[in-house]
Image (tube, rainbow, N blue to C red; front, side, top):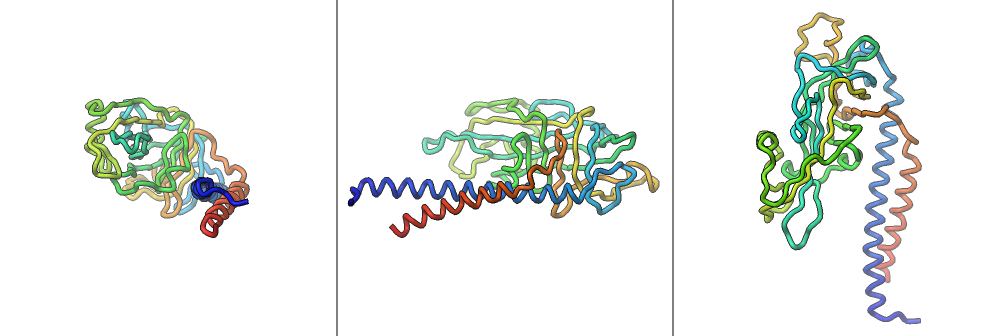
Length: 287
């Protein structure tokens, strides 16, 4: 039976779209699976330690209570909550007839050094400030899809108990003055649209945010280093600090860190999706 030309054209479009979608989904699943395997390996190498057992250059994980240090606290940029760390995400919807979807325009972390109390001792955690997004020419980073209730950058991953939208602004509406000052003062952020195309004049915005506050329980996986500015005697609990390594981002989670299923099943599912997607695309090219 010979199919009508219009039906052949429709089937080709469906196969192209479906094949491309399956290929992308397969790639993302493989990436998720690879990250799960990587996390499982890191957790296996990083036994839980007490602050007294932390050795420079080693990978360590702790779970304890967040406490402020002499660096104090900060006011979170979006919701103005007292905290030691705030993770935020800015989504924009642009006033263009061709695109009315919400775009993840920027995300990041702002923090002050804080401590995690564990069994009467404490270990410092130094996260720093990190921003990625359109304005930093990082329109998409793979790490950004790894955390749903939080923020993920190449340097740090923060998973919060809650990560909600706390503010929305309409076209032409300025953010509150305090938030506007933060946006203008932070490299990579702006009160102007942060579109990946230069033709956008205005945007709607949604601001999401989560925090770590003194008294919160947190799990941390990172590399132990000796403070470069340490002026304390050897053996003082503030001498060591958890940071991110060159190849190992600092991980913070409101929930206990879990290796999960190891990621093998997710990788196999991703490979299956990718194989079907490639088969559909190949069928269209050969047809």
